[in-house]
Amino acid sequence: MRFILLFSIFFGLSVNAQDINSVFISMPDSLSPILTKVNRQDFSDFLSSGMKAVVKNKFDGKSEMLKLTEDYLLLKTTSVSSEEMKLLPLNDSVNVVCVVNTYSGPAEDSKVSFYTTDWKELPLSDFIKLPDYKDFYKSQNDSINSVSIDDFTMDMPVMKANLSSNDNDIVFKITSFEAMDKETAEKLKPYTADSLNYKWVDGTFVKE
Image 1 (cartoon, one colour):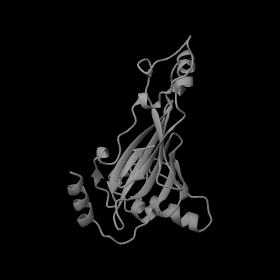
Image 2 (cartoon, helix red, strand yellow):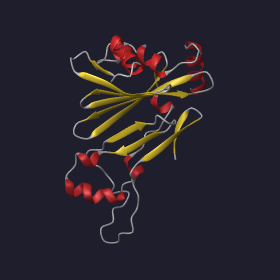
Image 3 (tube, one colour):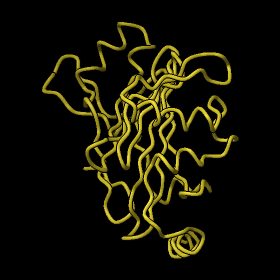
Image 4 (cartoon, one colour):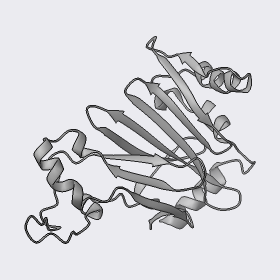
């Protein structure tokens, strides 16, 4: 399956060097419900002119590009949502695009997706096995109020993901505590890892 995927990506794309901004601008409108192509072009034009990269989006709200490098970008799409994109190498000439969309309401919740650089969606499972909530469990030396891994559950399991602008890592953090009752949150927090880090290794994300 992975050989077929790599074969189709390689022959379906130009192997010329690409940067995330050109890929972002070419994004189809169906995947960009808030921003027009002109909006997407304006972001980098504003940044290159030393201006704040703020545009009026399709719904007359404001969207801002907060960071742009050769292989990474961060957008504040609305007051309650953001989008990150990262070019990740499959080999010396072929990249995939990892997209993280994060929404707040009331806890921040992220969706991770993968695409070819001409925006054909790729199977998530080919690139990452998303963490289970029990992956965040850490034991404590507490003989009185101990929480076992079998007890480690969330009333509203929610996770936030963040891509890195400096390397090819992705970090997951539980945000469920923002939406659950205070008593349950305080009980579970001591048994919860602050974050889980995944590194990009040979075309897949691997948990450290």
